[in-house]
Image (tube, rainbow, N blue to C red; front, side, top):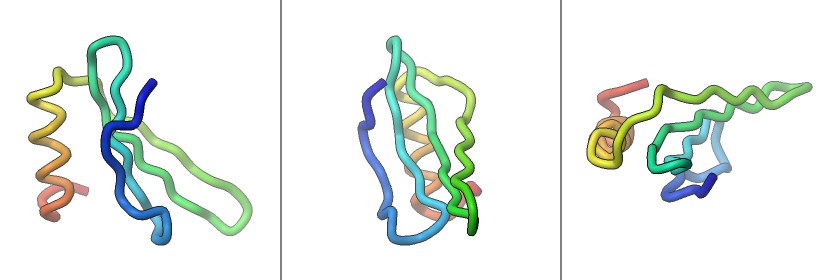
Length: 62
Protein backbone atom coordinates (compact mmCIF):
# COMPACT_ATOMS: atom_id res chain seq x y z
CA UNK A 1 0.00 0.00 0.00
CA UNK A 2 1.27 3.45 -0.95
CA UNK A 3 -0.03 6.83 0.21
CA UNK A 4 -0.53 9.06 -2.83
CA UNK A 5 -1.82 12.21 -1.10
CA UNK A 6 -2.80 13.25 2.41
CA UNK A 7 -4.17 16.01 4.58
CA UNK A 8 -2.44 17.41 7.64
CA UNK A 9 -2.28 15.07 10.64
CA UNK A 10 -2.55 18.09 12.94
CA UNK A 11 -6.34 17.89 12.88
CA UNK A 12 -8.76 15.05 13.40
CA UNK A 13 -9.93 13.50 11.23
CA UNK A 14 -7.19 13.45 8.65
CA UNK A 15 -7.35 11.71 5.29
CA UNK A 16 -5.02 9.75 3.01
CA UNK A 17 -5.48 8.77 -0.62
CA UNK A 18 -3.98 5.28 -0.82
CA UNK A 19 -3.15 2.92 -3.67
CA UNK A 20 -2.84 -0.86 -3.53
CA UNK A 21 -3.16 -3.54 -6.15
CA UNK A 22 -4.00 -1.10 -8.94
CA UNK A 23 -6.91 0.41 -7.01
CA UNK A 24 -7.22 3.49 -4.83
CA UNK A 25 -9.18 4.25 -1.69
CA UNK A 26 -9.50 6.95 0.94
CA UNK A 27 -8.49 6.27 4.52
CA UNK A 28 -9.90 8.41 7.33
CA UNK A 29 -8.14 8.46 10.70
CA UNK A 30 -9.75 9.92 13.80
CA UNK A 31 -7.87 10.47 17.04
CA UNK A 32 -9.95 9.66 20.10
CA UNK A 33 -8.64 10.32 23.63
CA UNK A 34 -7.54 6.72 24.14
CA UNK A 35 -7.29 5.27 20.60
CA UNK A 36 -6.99 5.90 16.88
CA UNK A 37 -9.92 4.89 14.66
CA UNK A 38 -9.21 4.13 10.99
CA UNK A 39 -11.89 3.72 8.32
CA UNK A 40 -11.39 2.97 4.62
CA UNK A 41 -13.63 3.69 1.66
CA UNK A 42 -14.55 1.34 -1.15
CA UNK A 43 -11.87 0.71 -3.79
CA UNK A 44 -12.00 2.62 -7.08
CA UNK A 45 -9.91 2.99 -10.20
CA UNK A 46 -7.54 5.98 -10.14
CA UNK A 47 -9.87 8.31 -12.06
CA UNK A 48 -12.84 7.69 -9.77
CA UNK A 49 -10.69 7.87 -6.63
CA UNK A 50 -9.14 11.16 -7.71
CA UNK A 51 -12.62 12.61 -8.28
CA UNK A 52 -13.69 11.46 -4.80
CA UNK A 53 -10.49 12.87 -3.26
CA UNK A 54 -11.03 16.26 -4.93
CA UNK A 55 -14.65 16.32 -3.77
CA UNK A 56 -13.49 15.56 -0.22
CA UNK A 57 -10.96 18.40 -0.29
CA UNK A 58 -13.61 20.80 -1.60
CA UNK A 59 -15.94 19.88 1.27
CA UNK A 60 -18.45 18.05 -0.91
CA UNK A 61 -17.92 14.71 0.90
CA UNK A 62 -17.55 13.67 4.51
